[in-house]
Image (cartoon, rainbow over all chains, first blue to last red; front, side, top):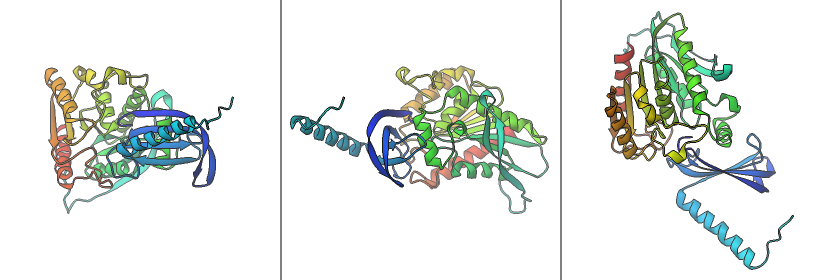
Length: 89
Length: 252
């Protein structure tokens, strides 16, 4: 890694990859060189089943990442406000 | 060793195995002239995106210029797949340890020196994270006669960015630099930023080291990569000229 900016989040969820749906367990979030975008650096997220398993990759610029993070936070806030989130033990 | 139309060319390029850090067998791309030696050597350190086509092509380019050139796969231990698959493995692992990289690169230099037609002089070049690894390695080894840092990010590090994989900021090793250094940078780069390049240059100056830095306007990070939008033709051609001249001067 050039910037060495990497964060990992443990995820319980599902994602649809090249071979269909899979259980995703990790989100690797990095700010580094993208593969597809033309930007020098980008916010990259790899949703992984495992490091060598199924994967969904997204790359976006920093402003888009902030907008996405804000949208996620807002959606969760509204769900909490509506008492719609049930915690599973 | 600039190209002439009447030169007789003959090179071989292939994947070989090198005994790297910890005795591990790692792949390396080895391209060399088959014309009579002695041939100087060059080790290429690939960039963060990985052991990719650009680096294989650059390795061949050095061979056509008369160098025995080798580019070890620093991500060997993490597994194989497409370059982007391997990049995910690298991110999952949090990168590769500096100490391991240094040993792998030194092993590649020794591999070159063990060739029967080796001149005994070996240069080192790397870009992006490979530029940082170039500086790290050359400051901890006496195997190299000259080194080229192409926009190495993370030579200057904040204390809070140090970790088990990257325990020492390369700039702090400057007093140990044993050979001439060429640095190539784009002034629009943010990693390293022009301010970080200033800091690096000040450290070299303070330590009385032999170096030349060239900084290009209108260029950012990775401006040699002809397969990326960052490519800057005019600046890249000029800077490649400086790389060839530097190695010819110090490795011939």
